[in-house]
Length: 258
Image (spheres, rainbow, N blue to C red):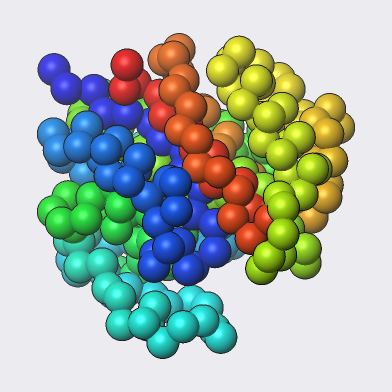
């Protein structure tokens, strides 16, 4: 029986949709392993709510939730179908674990979902739902959320946490070398993920180098913990994405693909 993978993907800036860099083709190669998936559940930092919400639209719209970027970005769409049945199943699974979840029949896909999915599943042929992040989510809560969603993998549903391994937009560089602190944080993260050091990853803000500089706010780091929670005991695989704009590490990880 097909067991779908758990994936953390760095989506970086919205321009990743037009600038694949190192990561784009590698996500497309990884996405071939999702051909047998019956659905994809995405958790993105760009949908934060009171409590948890789950998309339930039959054909979720593509949300261009950004401004000031090249006009070509606003022409892009990701016309994947939603799944009311998967949304209901996911909400029920969350409720069983004491996490209040509501199905939102109108919400579309934000760019944290559709940008990486354009590489993972370019044909938009797999049903996709999004699960929101509560405003008060912390690292322990993100890990729990992933563990709650993990049983879906045995049903052939892939879990995708979409964030950015480093995310300090105040220091974006259009030219020049990658920042040393971003490289150091990415290297620390890789060592911790590959070693399965869950405790360190949860407590990263106190033990990782330049953690607060790498993540002035936590929302783009938390999807890594969601994917890690859904991974169970699977062996991680690192996907080198390089660093864009000097400070945005695009490194990504997948579990259950070996």
